[in-house]
Length: 157
Image (cartoon, rainbow, N blue to C red):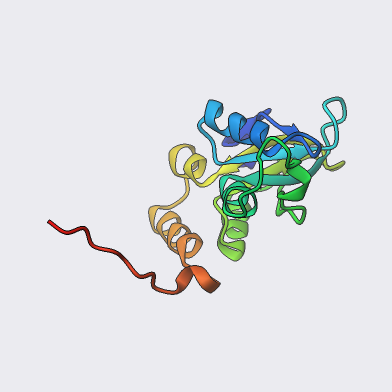
């Protein structure tokens, strides 16, 4: 099975000069956690991605005004991607290797075609159950500071 059979085609995008608030609104309205960032609406070459985590860490946690912060200030520019013709197994392997849950799909010229998410693979692909479970486990493994235990406060009863 190929990525083109399981990907979400023509995902909602933004451009690098859009505000972080616009990217957040796209996420809210589409019930999604990632927005591809394209060069312009006509060409649609992928230049980055912005995730809900990017917005939280680089905008909200810093106390910055989401309406004044351009997406280019908080987006990821080194994007792992695949092509529509790639095997689903390649997308799964990229997710494992990079500990990511979503991968933009681009053509040979880098033009955005779609996005494939772990959920798409679980729902639509004929990926073996053990392989899917292994991928989910590896993608979800904490890294760096995220792996340190956090102090928890307890509410008095």
